[in-house]
Length: 431
Image (cartoon, rainbow, N blue to C red):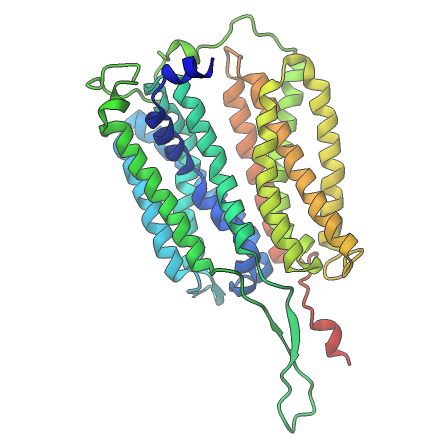
C-alpha cells in the first residue's frame, strides 16, 4: 500500500512543498521561543511579550492589504508577491541576527526598535500566508497540500527543538558589586550563557527561510513540479478570490448546524484566540520568570510544541462533538485563571523556589496551550464543510478575539501596576 501511495506522487515535490510551508511562520515562532533570552537583554524587559503580541496584531493588516490589492490592482502574479515576501523575511531575519540588541529612544523611552521592526516583517509574512501561500498550493495536486501543512506545523516545532538544545544556562545569581568605601550595599544580576547565542539562532532561522524561498522557486521552475500542477504551467495562477476551485476544495451541501451551536462555536473561537493569541502570551513572563529562567525556557519551548501537536487531533472532529469542545473551553478558562493568578502574584507567586512550583507552572502552560490548539482546530474542522460563510466568520472571530486580547493586556501590562517584575536580588537589598 505504501509503495502504491509513493508511486502516485513525486517525493521531491513533497519536500519542496514542505519547505515552502516552513517559511510561513518560522520567523515569528522562532523569535517567540527566544523570549527567555531576549527578555533579560531587551529595553522593554518583561513587557517585551506584550509588545510582540501587538506587533503580530499590526501585521494582520497584511491580508487586508492583499485583498484590496486583488480587488483594485492585481497587476502582479501571486508567485511574484510570494517571492517578495519570502525574500523580505529572509533578509530581515539575517539582519536581525546582527542588530536585535540595537535600541532607539521613542517618546522619551528606550525601545528595541530593530527587534520589533524586523519582527513586523516576519509577522507580516506569516499573517499574509493564510490568504496567499496555502491558496497558491491549489495549483498543485491535492496530495501536496498535506505536505505544505506539515511544513507549516514544523515552522513552530523546529525552532522549539533547536531552542531546547540551545538552553538558557542556569538561573541568574546575585553578585555583590558594592564599591569599596561605600555604605550602600549593591547587587547585580549575572546570567549564564546558553550553549549557543541568540545571533546563531537567528542565523539558523534565516537559513530556514532561505531554503523556503529556494523551494518555492523550485516549485515554479523545476519540470518535475510543473508536471504535478492541476493546470497547464502556462496558465495564469488562480487567486484565492477565484470562485472556481478544484473539486477537492468544494464543500458538502448537506452540511447542517443549529444556530445555537453556530454562534456558540464562533464565541468559543473568539475567546480561545483572545486567550491564546492575546492575553496569555503577553503575561507569560510575569507568570513564569519568578520560577526561574529554566522554567520560563521550558514553558516557552514546550508550550510552542504543544499547540501544533494538539491541533492535529482536531481533524477527527465531527458535528456531534460540540459538547466536548464546550467542556474543553471551560477547562481552558479554569487553566487560564490559574495562569493569570500566578502573573498577578509576581514577584512572589505560590511555590516559588521549589521544584514542585517549576513543574506545575510548566505543566500548566503546556496544558493550556495544547487545549487552546485543540479547540481552535476542532472548531475549524466543524466549519470546514459549511457551504456558506462559516470559515469566513471563523476567521473574523479569530482576528477580533486576538485583537481584543492583545490591546487589553498591552494596556494592563504597560499602564497599570497589576503586574510586577521579579529580580533575584530584591530579597537581598534589605539586608
